[in-house]
Amino acid sequence: MTGRLTAHNTSASMIYRAGWVVCDPWTIYPDGFVHVENGLIRDVGSRTGAGANHIPTIDCGDGVIFPALINAHTHLELSALKGSLSTENGFTGWVQELLRKRELLTSDDLLTAATSALAEMIASGCGAVGDISTLGATWNCLRDSGMSGVWFHEFLGSRIPDIAIEDAPRHDLRMSLAGHAPHTTAPDVLKAIKTGLQRRDLPFSIHLAESGEEVQFLKTASGKWKDFLMSRGIDPASWGLPAPSPVHYMQRIGILDPQTILVHVLHADGPDMDIIRSSGAHICICPRSNMALHQRLPDLANMLKTGVRLCIGTDSLASVESLNLLDEMRFTSSRFPAVSPATIFEMATLGGAQALGIDAHLGSLTPGKMGKLAYSPARASRASDVLNIVIYDTTDP
Ligand SMILES: [Zn+2]
Image (cartoon, rainbow, N blue to C red; front, side):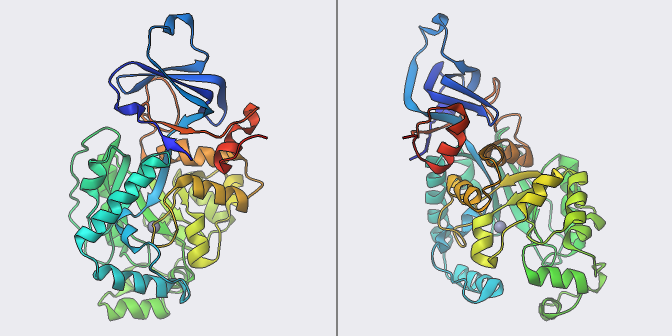
């Protein structure tokens, strides 16, 4: 069982030691220690010197201390729908059932489930989250939880919203905005949100190239999805479609830059990847959700070959069984055996911190960053095994 230490809450000077300390995927110390002072990492390394004898020490055990994980994409407000939706009628059927069942829930139901999901995330070693909220319900519970990250208020449709963003309560937790997806949200809305965020130096998130329906609509400007939009009083005639691909369309309307997180990206070819890489935008993969809803996985090999910046998220409890990022990492590792544990670990730590714009505070155990530590009791005998053993929660024989 992996759990997060609450080292960031301590105001005192404290040393945490364990069999191994993972500073980042390439720097792993045996018999390691992390010295935290006033909530910040002061020092990290192998074996404390004699000068540290007077500092209180917590011996965590023979397992592994590593940076608190970063779940770059979830929807806490959908936690109350856990286990209640069917994927048998395809993605569209799943979305329709989600909207219908969410309507039946009270805001108390949503918040109670979100609060307990958040507690489970923290208990499983997660220290920061990219939380997407359409109803605007989860900001207060996130702010009061001690979790770091970015809370994205999400918009869709054709009405340009007020760009209302509260000032950040803490440097490691900020409020921002998201567009839902390119086939549900008018380009004028996406551009207005993105422009507002660029002025404030905040990240933007959007689901992209997730479903066949989305791709077909963007490439043809017609079909069932166009009929659906028209039936809702939204005429996409002025959207500038068709486009060669969802990624081309994002580039055309000016959404791609280093502060944009593209979530899923299941339908993208080599030229699409080149566009994303040269824009500096991040891709957030959510493989368990993709498999459940679309029976498809992202082309991770191509993403890595192209050198796209990557992070990882669980998506919501409406499509996966847990918000435990280690479950997502283990699934990813088992589905992509050629991808190294270090790469998967990087996506779940530094990659997520960079995507959310909090890498000055989190993502690695580096002096000056927050002392948010996770601990796994899994034991390794060699440094080269440590990350794999943490991901699979196993112990060397
Ligand atoms: Zn999502």
